[in-house]
Amino acid sequence: MDPATAHPLLELSKGNTVVQCGLLAQRRASQPERFDYSTCVLASRGFSCGRHYWEVVVGSKSDWRLGVIKGTASRKGKLSKSPGHGVWLIGLKEGRVYEAFGCPRAPLPVAGHPHRIGVYLHYEQGELTFFDADRPDDLRPLYTFQADFQGKLYPILDTCWHERGSNSLPLVLPPPSGPS
Image (cartoon, rainbow, N blue to C red):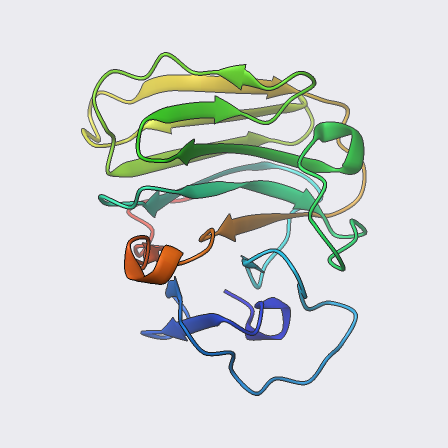
C-alpha cells in the first residue's frame, strides 16, 4: 500500500501490507494524493491494461470496503462511492450486510462470512469481479461490475472507522500466490 495516500488515522505495518484504523491520527503531510476524510489507502501500483488478480484478508472485521478507484478520483472530503465517480467497491456493513456500491447499491447474497476476498480486474474487457476466496480451489463469484475503464485504476482499501475499537481489526494484502 502507498503510505502517501493513507488517511492520517491509518496505521500501516509489515512492509505496508497490513492496514488498520488507529485511535490517534498519525503526523502526515497534507498532500493531494492523501485521503483526508475517508479511511482509505491505495495500492502503490495501478493498472491501465491487462488482467490482474489480488486478494484481501478481511478476517472477522465488521465493516470494510474494497475495490478499485480511478487515479484521478478526488481523495478530499467524503469518498463518492459509485462507478460514476470512478470508484468500484463492495463492502460489509455492521457485520451483516454485504453490498456492491453501484447505482443503486445492490445487496449481495453472500453465504457465510468470507475471510478472504479475491479481486479480478480484466481492464480491456471492462470487468471487475469479486470472489469469496476462502477456498483457493473453489472461488465463488460475489459481484461483477461492467465498465468502460479509462485511465489508471488503483486497488483501494477502506478500513471504515474503528468504532472505538470494535472495528479495529486490520485488512491484509497477503503475498501473491501466482502470476497476475
